Amino acid sequence: MADVDIHVSSAKKEYVVTLDANRFERLAATFGFFNLDFLKSLNQAERDIKKGKAREISSLKELRKKKV
Image 1 (spheres, helix red, strand yellow):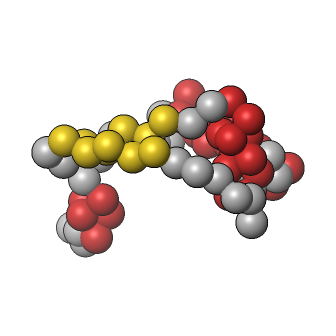
Image 2 (spheres, rainbow, N blue to C red):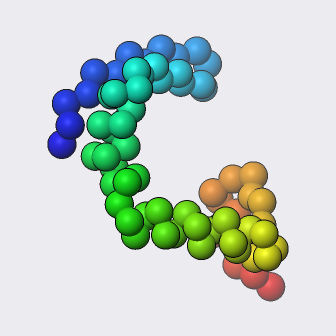
Image 3 (cartoon, rainbow, N blue to C red):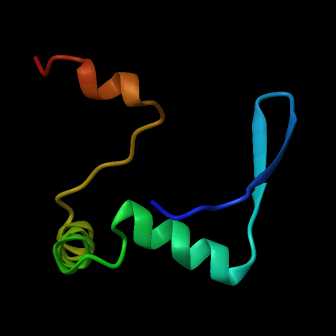
């Protein structure tokens, strides 16, 4: 795992994370954002959005609601 120093400052319920470009790339690589499968899934998600297969939600709790 990449060694990344992150400065986090908080106000109310918001958090601001400040990274330089090199550290951001190291963090992204650690999370697998450059993985080919991940990039393919992003492309598929963009196609799904254009086709109207996705919907906006205001909270992750909405995903738990049962469809009637």
